[in-house]
Image (cartoon, rainbow, N blue to C red):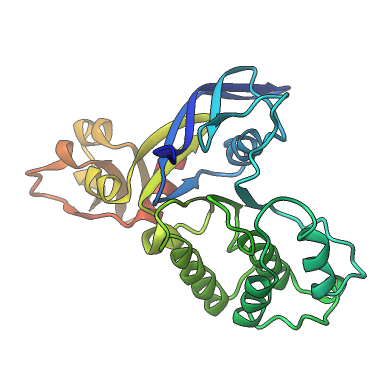
Length: 282
């Protein structure tokens, strides 16, 4: 019987010189997409590498598809990953990439791989060295999804893609979740992607989880506030998570519960990208 959660992280700590990923708790149920967001250097890639068994926790536990990731067990074979750079030989064409990747791990489908290449508009006879960054990302996604993976982990998958290709990729990820055994974790700085596809959002700041909620919960939790220079009272400033002042006034983000009933300023729903940006400023 399949375990309920694709990812369970409890108290994960991993230290490097000058940086610590500290006491991270994270749970991703099967059948859902989680967006992992935060500024550069917040720990997103470190967390992903711990999930894949490329790095190992100093303390805490990391469980993937019901199995603990340790130096002895390594990563789980039911995981597909798309990282920030490909490791394919530059002189291979895309058919050769498929043959090579298909030799490792379970449940490879050449038919599905070729169908994904066609969907992404990639010529199977084209060589890796002739691909743009966006094309390379599509190739890695095709190679990852050509297996019957239960968890797909992507590190900045839409970076370098044009808007049409981004939409195409997000639609493909949604197709993955037709099978509710599966789950997707992806890190991104393009937060518009999150509102399109993510059910859950985890915000990392300075190596710690600042917020973890469903997308709707996060949108409901905060409000954007605008007003003139005289409207930014000490009490209002204290209530705001972060504020940006300019010549004609200010704009800030605060908890919705603390901003209810204000009459002299404009209080309105915040987009997810605004929430993440202001949390980063905090």
